[in-house]
Length: 166
Image (cartoon, rainbow, N blue to C red; front, side, top):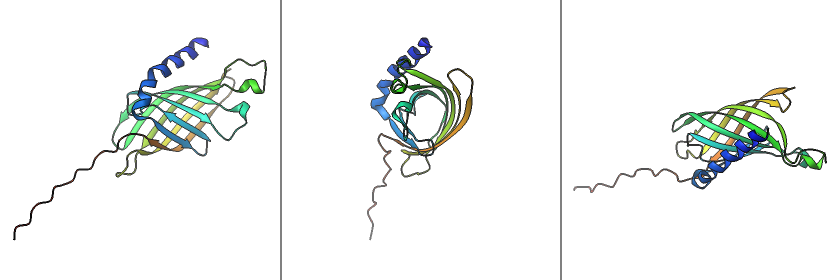
């Protein structure tokens, strides 16, 4: 278990350089998740999700390394695995581990940029099978959210005016 945690910390450390480049922020309202991602246009990127609308002792953090399968201007398909941590669970249980591992997930998703005038606004759709840490139960989750990718907008070409001959 500790090796798996070290692997995720290592992946996160490698991804911090991309945080400066083109991070994104998203919100999944029906799942109550706030998402912060590294540059999702890269082949491998990291998505972290924070549980909102919850008691302090059950605030979860998902660490999700993702791999892009296909990227286009409008549609981006990706897959990844994840680890759900609960760093504040010790509030409810003093005997709990310092960082409690809640479970594991697999993510298959798509991000769609429907607005031609602003491709930084994206819709995110995901299927997310999730199992508890003891593998005794699981659930198939689905997520729908809105994502904003920080970065430069593409310049639109302007055609220079032609002089009019009388």
